[in-house]
Amino acid sequence: MKINFQRFRAGLQSGTRYRVTGGGLLFFAALLLVGFTSFLTGNNLLFLVFSALLAILLVSGFVSRLMLSGLELELLVPEHVWARTPSPARIRLRNLKRFTPSFSLELSGQRSGMGNVPPILRDPVYFPIIQGRTTVEAMVDVSFPHRGRHKENVFQISTRFPFGFLRKSTTLALQRETIVYPAMEEFPGGQTLLQLSSSGETEMAMRGIGRDFYRIRPYEAGDNARHIDWKSSAHTGSPHIREFTRDEQGIVEIFLDRRTDAGASRVFETAVERCAWLVSNLGAGDSNLFFSSQGVALAAFEEEQFYAILKYLALVEPLIAVTSGRGTESQFRAGRAQIVFSSRPGEFQDTGWAGAFFVDSAQ
Image 1: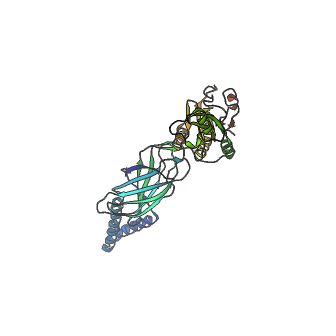
Image 2 (image 1 turned 90 degrees about the vertical axis):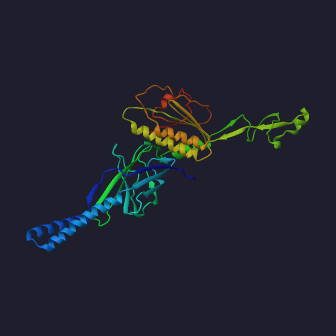
Image 3 (image 1 turned 180 degrees about the vertical axis):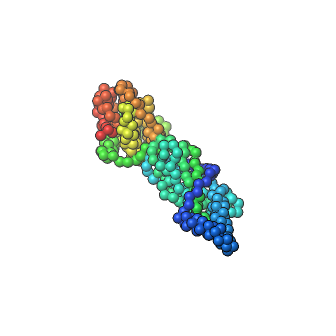
């Protein structure tokens, strides 16, 4: 399957953080010891050693800061991503400096400041060297923690170059919206729902390629000559065509009940994830799907239409403290496999869903 990538690009933000490493602690201890001894004894040689140690520290800070300057990050993620599911992505790190290379860079994810959201990049990526005016690329796995809109993804780039005494790091945020579908996690009874969905078969009295005879009608331009009924054509003096009923297999009607009691958001999220799992699996087959909820009705016969339903499930919000059964009526013709995700199955008996299979996410 071809993966279309969305591009996210950002330069480094201002502000650099410093952290002393284990080797740096030993170096500072040696620096203090030599400095204290040189001032205590007045030994010129110790003063020279102390000056050399200070120069090394200053050079280390300058060079490591230079390594982090002039960098640009680009993240390419798939067009369709699911929550809590690793997705392949590409990291491109570009060195905008003309001549100076950047050494020993490590890119890692960082928790977002809003709600302390876990980072999407779990494993750090190491770049040993990036030459001036060049771009390096690495394949990574990204995982979004929850469904919905992700507007900011924070990353951290750090280096210990050149001596490893200090770990300098700076952050960047990619400011572009990503819509993440609900998690694709199988649940108890999920396979039963798929079998129920795939077993649904209805016959439509329409022209098609089914097995049962429907009618004979006059020939029209574009009709298949193999379906000409020669006996009727000879009797009427004009060509006539045999039509057959069209079999529709795997026709499924799904309803997601958005009504949720206050404090039961986890139950609603479970219902959304289970509904999305079923929709995703139906979209991978040959099923035709009708989806509805309070205020929405969607039909899916092609792949992109299934993604439209998943996008709705990615952004849907519960209806809190709604007790009326209004909005639960079946919007489509009966006789299909019907599945309802709701914690109030008793309210669907008079709304066209009496024969549906009910999934209670509270259990």
